[in-house]
Image (cartoon, rainbow, N blue to C red; front, top):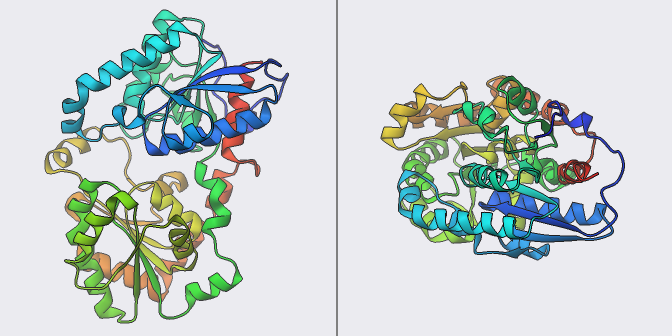
Length: 402
């Protein structure tokens, strides 16, 4: 285990280069977000190491496009929710064993574990037991600042370095006795040019009719739990602002469910699945109604005032408050350390109040200006000196191979 101290993003070393020979890197990702993160890391590692990099492991289409040979389909280790985990446990354990055996049979120069903490942390522990000297990097810190803080100390013997995407995570990991942690920047920082409007789009953003984004979540359960409440909010909004236009970006695999959901709503909504259309909508939207998640940070970086909501199953809603360590579920609020984005969670989802708040964000006033002022501070808080997060992550990995 490395004796390095926890460091922030500004402390990434640029010392001697990694070995001037092709590198063998084993990468494991278990979710779509991890597939995207890992693909960016892989592209930058290849660019920074001219001698070549061979990638093996587990990943999705984006990682495979970067040259990864995946042991098995990535979605076989992805399970959301208690019931899915229990049902898929035999398969997940089998795939875990297969992953560990592949690493041990042909030890790589370095093992990079991306997101999917429940799977990747167990892989790290099993690999460390059999290959005690293998360097292991975890890309994306576990959310120990939300719940189960003991995970930080538990992973310290098995992980040499954590690459964090939120600026407060290195200090949290240090305080909890976790592995050395480097802040490399949130991946959304690499998308600012596509999220923010040009001059013409900025004019459209404040023109009539106003455009409001609707983002009820990308998972089936989220749509079920929030769909009716969002429909009521938008119906009330339409009564207050009759000319408002509603755009709902979603994933192709969710299109049928989304169309079924919005068919019950009292207002027309334009559903888009094309990524370019989604980004175009972000650049001209006046405000947004969104489920809690990464999208709230995406909206904040795009400068779109937002009303956010979230609801978990009834039993989880009763239990979770006893374990949660933070007072907000909204990423911009966590990062800024203030309640910038209005949030309505679980028992407090209140369509009339949400509609009133959303209408104020559309028409303007103190609430809108307060959010925009808070969002303007995000760049400084998230700042990484202008270097793309994936490149900083690649430098951090290669520094371990000096």
